[in-house]
Length: 328
Image 1 (tube, rainbow, N blue to C red):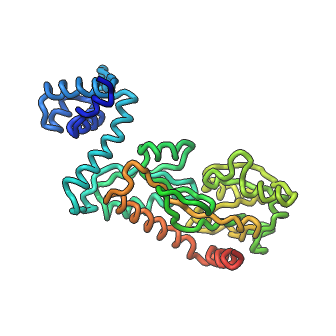
Image 2: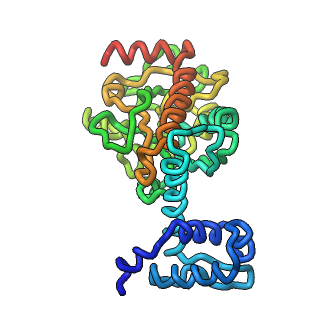
Image 3: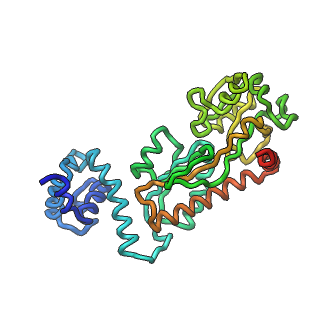
């Protein structure tokens, strides 16, 4: 009998057992959790090993340890169980306050200031949801694809969209210098300024990696080169560094601290502003289309949009956005 034939024997009870054993690492705890006898658990575990052709759980001094294959199956098992409960058992009865799960969310560095307000909003709307929010990393897209991450927020240049992503708000970028900087009174930075004054690059959601930043590309197209003195991934560190030098940084207006004392916000060169982009919400396809996911999409979309609009509404930023929009 091959594995495809074995899958005919796979049941919801098997999936629940996998999830419970991964969670507890103990057959006795799983027995109490699922109200199964330990002999029944042993029988089902033997069937699971046969179905998937994998040991699934290894006995160790500290309990049952899932194999890598088991962990992979467990991610899908959790989502399948949630979908069955949500769509088949509860039907159209959907109550956000009853959502009980860990919500794994990634954003690029420029949007991490959203995590605090989002946590507070989640506690009010979905008190049983545990938020796990982290900065974007290299393999984030693959993890979204696998379902180990539920949602991601990233800056992307305007263009084609896929089924599992949604444009939320434009990403307006600004140049920032210290208060009293020679350029502060100019209100705008030119390409020549970026080639003359020192530049501290923010990662800007991966755009500035490997010498491929917008600043470097646009300057090169215009026969200039940036006077780079550093690349720092965490933009909050850059703002601290600006107070010590005549450096310029270029980043999303969403990153700007609430208190702008000591900083001057300037419009970026028109040639760079011409490259338009949006914050885009990415959704794991493993649960796309469920009532719960649809609700969370709307919730995250509205929460982030409100957060960004508050950042953009400040006079120092709103004036620059008006100028960018007028030139678009």
